[in-house]
Length: 397
Image 1: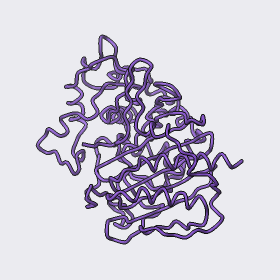
Image 2: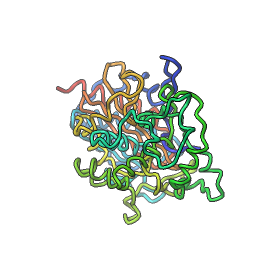
Image 3: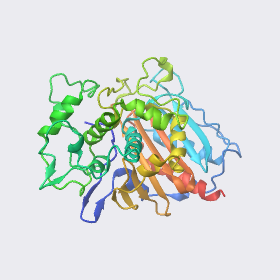
């Protein structure tokens, strides 16, 4: 089963850290493929692509992006993909394939995709705002904010702290068994009726196996719980908090939870292994772990805001809460340093038929976002785009 954050898992033993898959890829940068990259203008090249696309192929950058995306599209599961590239605050968008297999509708930079666990980066920023508003303390015992008694949420007297929920060191199970063990479970939309009460029941039934704050192990349930705490202390729904603190200040007009009223051709419909359309995933009760839908246009704005620490809450969400800047965590941000010495902030996501990747390179004022509506493997593409972005940014003043 795959429930958001499809490519993320960090575990530590002492000071040794097993890197998440996304970060292993970063250690494999291959700069040779991006020699001679220029800005978004220059010499024309011939388009020999198989998938429909809007890549103008006018520049070396266009060509390199095309080569990388074409390799991604060789995966037989691929349907559509939208890529946003930010290099020294200059933006380029590229779209390939279809919004639905066989419909001949090319996605665009305003096409909506599920972003799954990339939502968690937004949740981390909300936590930062909650701390600044003095409504929650990062070192608080989470039971301070729960209405029932949970004597099980400690290990040898050490409780789970709020920050442990945001850096995946809480030891809360990734997904509670009562999600799929119940008769109502629907594998095609597994969380659409998974309520707060079911979350709390799972929380009651779990058993701590070691000290919180010591070992990182990815947990959707921990971030879902964090979202309920944020909603409760403000007395507002999650999306209202996201809108007020992130979307409105940074003119992110596309990002939303509910896309039911949108025309069908505005959505990149998710697909399974056989390129068949599957339902969008709904998380009406626990949105903080993965409910947002967005566009490359909006997520480039999000990257820009994070690159510049555009609000105190964003800056706080980037502060290290676990590990090191070489390999560690902020508040729902994975942090690492490239071989070239550049700090990276990232998060990715996966639902039943969509994938997302978002990376920020603050010092370079650069980054990229990948949104797909299939299960095609984007791991190599992530690595190649990171190399392209870094090399291009290094050539510009």
